[in-house]
Image (cartoon, rainbow, N blue to C red; front, side):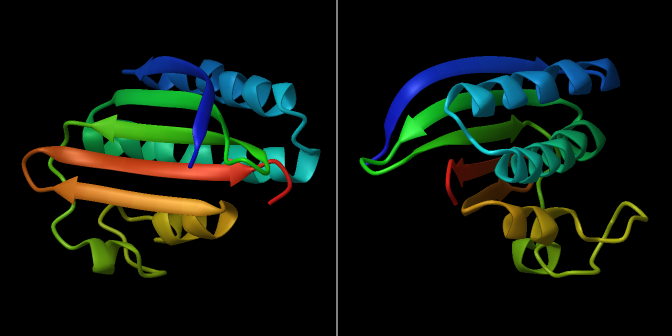
Length: 137
């Protein structure tokens, strides 16, 4: 069972929100004592997902939580938008697939950087991506 130690909502509506958001994620990771390598992985994953939130979802809300699973502390980020949704999640999770003329490494690459990754999407309703990076994971 995961316990929430702290929680903060962060609204993302424009490109200028990205750097302050990244700084909040870094602050949360530093606060739990996460090492620099795992901080870098978390911030890289968060950067990719927040850019997706802006590009495909038209902005949204990110919840930043410090969590504990009984053995270890971590950072959970929940990205939610009310965008068009992803019609084929399994396709979107394949390396090389892109609808945005990019390298197509975003979602699968992000999944590789974190310890836990979950994506829920409904066409016409929106998408929610939840990631957790454990302090020592």
